[in-house]
Image (cartoon, rainbow, N blue to C red; front, top):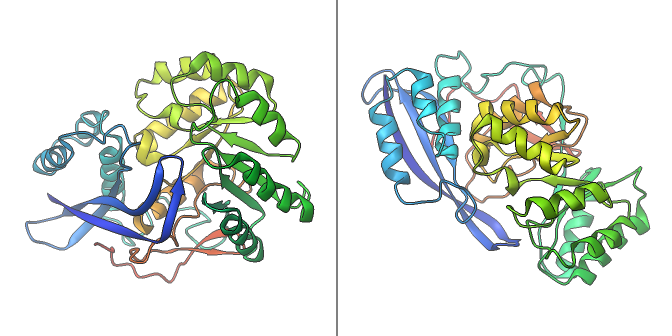
Amino acid sequence: MYATYQKYILHFKQPAGTSRGTLTQKESWFILLHEEKNGAVEGVGECGILRGLSCDDKPGYHKKLREVCENINLPRETLLESLKDWPSIRFGLEQAFLSRNQVNKNVFLPSPFTRGEKSIDINGLIWMGSKDFMLKQIQDKLEAGFRCIKLKIGTGDFEKELECIQFIRSKYSARDIQIRTDANGGFSTSEALEKLKRLAEYDIHSIEQPLKAGLIDETAHLCAQNTVPIALDEELIGIQNPHEKKVLIARIQPQYIILKPSLIGGFQACDEWIHAAEKHGVKFWITSALESNIGLNAIAQYTALNADCEFPQGLGTGGLYTNNLPGPCTIKNGQLHFDTTFTHKPVTP
């Protein structure tokens, strides 16, 4: 078996405002498996790195990809174990191995989802921006059939962000529309509790990462208040030891955790977090991290087997790019569907 890798730059249809700045493009790398040198692609996996957030955003990324490809015939577990500090590459390699030798290379975790029998409820993502810009996004998502809206908040004008939430609640109750918020660590410890109290007035489902990662005791205190249920996101990044995962969950006792395979080390790492969470009654949902349709397809298939798909997942990023790669996942009425007529040939950049 031979392996190669290739870089691909995804371009956003419109600038995406986050608490870490505005994104106009997204970098991904693809691992391609071949049965023989220069042969057809038999497996493909996306290594979706987020600059400034991924713990493997560090010197040597390109070198590590080359090393993996040069040693592709080592035992699978040996290769995956060597990538614990390179979570996005580990996830890409997992995908490539799963898709290899499949009759339909776009289906490697069969389920009612991949057979087109069931769909996955997802949230509609609202990007940061001016009040008018956010309101326009909200209206578009509601008209598109979404029943769960996720708003990026935390670094803009909090009063205007509250106005956007108030707009939703003036038209839809919590029974009709679920509102999730994501602060990306944008709240200070001194203001977080007061902001959570104000958000609670609008029947907010949850808030992701109100404080920066690493503030363990402060985050645990907020979770204990349960003013608005808290979901850990960035807090999970960089923790690879299963015991350390159990300790973190036990210390913070969050209401939810959010699993992003590209950021935490793939499906095996997700399994470890799920096991740690379930011991403490902590719920979870699974989210893509701005991957192309190739990575999104893999995450959706894992989600279909491991999550409550009637509970909205964070898999609505497939339409963000002008040059996204084709994939079998489509969105209709706020749900992710698998197109069973999609070509069996593996799509590569």
